[in-house]
Length: 168
Image (cartoon, rainbow, N blue to C red; front, side):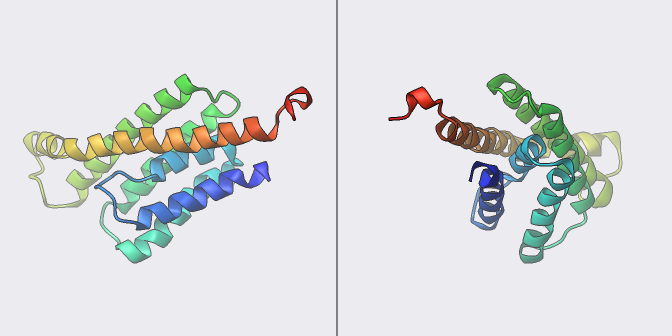
């Protein structure tokens, strides 16, 4: 049963993305990090992208999708580096790194693939400044969902794999 726990967490994350939520407060970055940590590499990289693609069918496609999807692939690789080294500090630091990475890549994508900002240094700075509220939500969402996913899985493993002398 415990080996299927990551799959249940991933399916829950997929469903959450389709529910109403504050902008960028979604579990997909956390899902990529968690999947990278606990799934075989081919699934860790493909499952977040598949969930994004299926949910984007309902939510809509956009010009920055390559940047968004690319950032999730990189976040999955960060998760892969956590394998066998999952602890509070590492997950916290990986969450922060993932949020910053997503912010930088996706906002560069907005700058490059849209006409929202002039293609100047000032336009690039404006793009990043205007995205700060979204970064805040990304950071809070990643920390929250990583806490949930990694915490629930750690608790489930602890309860499932109790030493024999603790069972009553």
